[in-house]
Image (cartoon, rainbow, N blue to C red; front, side, top):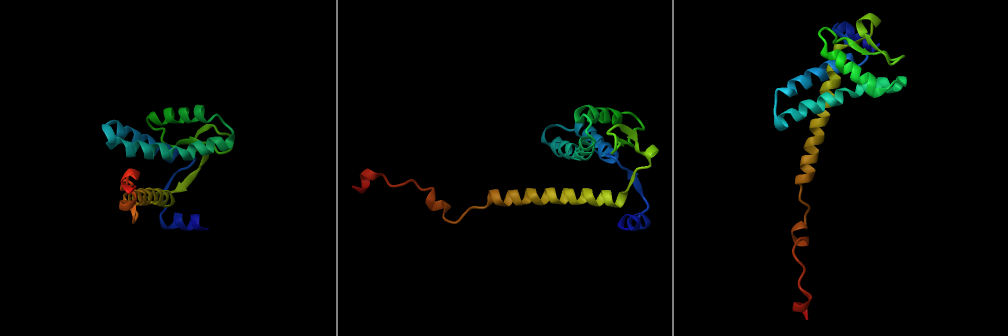
Length: 151
């Protein structure tokens, strides 16, 4: 019911079967190639994370993950192949347009937003925890008095 509601509110659809994730992953990887150093790391990290969806579909079908995922990456480098994804029943590469497998764009966008917000939150928490100093740390780091001086 919620899917129908989402489609009626925002009737934009994107291909399913991991095709959208691979298309975005490919675009981010290409964008990262124009950068140097640490600037490209976030793009590559998100691109790699997006490949989890097609990888999971392939694994659930019992197909060869490396072979099929490599083929899907190669397919997405070709012009006009952004709608190719993984058939959830066979694990084969197919054009999602031909199979009629679509997902609401609104759901996909919200998923991406939530994932990025969660990653940012985790990075902030990690920053706060690593920068936090416990009370009493100053005293515990002082060297102990030499035993000879106490006698």
